[in-house]
Image 1 (cartoon, rainbow, N blue to C red):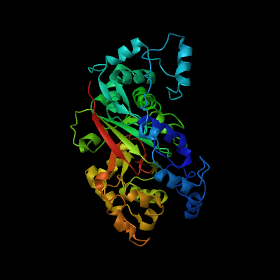
Image 2 (cartoon, helix red, strand yellow):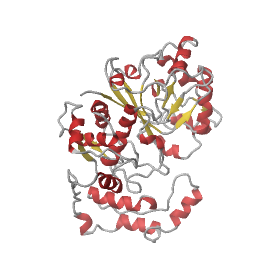
Image 3 (tube, rainbow, N blue to C red):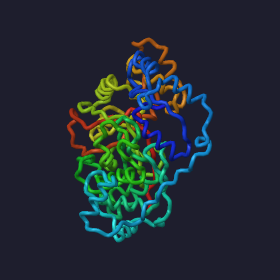
Image 4 (tube, one colour):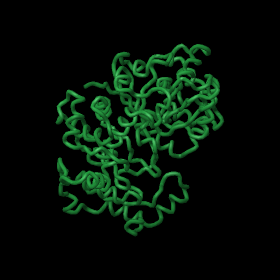
Amino acid sequence: MATSHFANYMERDSKIHGVPLRFSFPPHPTAWVSRETHQKYVEGNDPITGQPLMEELIDALTRPLTEEEKHPEPFKKSRRPQLLEPDTEDNLRRLFIQNGWTDGLPIILPTEERVAEMLTGTDHDSQEVIGHMSVTPHEEKLEYTVEKVAINAVMAGARPEHFPVILAIAATQRALIPSSTGSWCHMILVNGPIRNEIGMNSGIGAFSPVNMANSVIGRAWTLMSICQGQAKPGKTFWSSQGNNNTYNNMCAAENEEESVWEPFHVTKGYKADESIVSVFRGWAMLSTSGAASHRSLGEELNIQLAVMPPLNSAATIIMDPLVARNLKENEGFSTKQYFMKWLSKNIRIPAGQYWKTDQIDMLVASEAYKGVEPYASWKKLPDDALITPYFKPENIHIVVIGGGISPLWKTSDYIYGSSASIDKWRVKK
């Protein structure tokens, strides 16, 4: 079963995988609607077929398979030509836009010469397979090579010196644009010597459109997700409103020079002189401007969590260097880990607030939680009992980014995502 909104999607999915499943489609949406509404869905008709939903469901489960269903024809996707026919620059750019091969912004046309120049930024063979990607687990994952990544890098406006970082991102095989109807976003963090070698911004305005390396590296990932991950609105990409952060995916370097704590990649077991790319996936981004001390930051996070409980009990805090310095020198937090433990114990919300949505009941048993405790115990508590949603300090990640010029009464701290998962990849030529 799938809601009627995804009827066309499920038809394509069945063809791609060669499994002609029978589907019934209740009305859309099923999430965050009343029990009474659900009852009407059950008693009503399938909006796609017009048949009574429950009768259709029973029929689909009991009717013998047809010969076509027993022996489905394998789906064969036509291969794209490697080269386009010669044309004017304006016409070719227009063709890229019409075919949905861009992010809507002008691109650098990936000519053979430009792609060859991009490939000078790596020692990898151009035909080496880097991975497979799809914006949804239900679509066919397309194979892509070093050369295909180079094509997207050229389109993004990158230079050969940026290519090792872009390849590391490609090696995660993670598409940044989700198939969810939610408007998720990602963040790219670069650590180690390569930050300065390619001129990345880790200081003033690091997330702003003022630095070439940050902009083109982040944009290259967007174009990879569109061209290799097949992100197509209304077909594979279902984000209701979208997210402007996906234009360059909050791509920045960590300000290791001004940070009083060890760099993020070192806390994850890498050496300081290694160049590492980390990819964060977040549920939402919340500003905590106005918090400079550990107590004010904790209080601010508690206020934010009252609006949006942390479903997966994980978060990333992006912190201005001055805030980190104040926490260490004036408030005694000698390490990130010490501050993470304090936050873990002191960020609390009422159990009833955490369980305010029925959706979490469903999520508790999902793979995302990898076990039901302490969630099952929290569910039994009175609504006013205080719980610590960030019960694992290691699930609170801290990175230091910014110019170190914010006055302590107005910082640039953020909590990025209540669902922050991370991939880390070494950068190499």
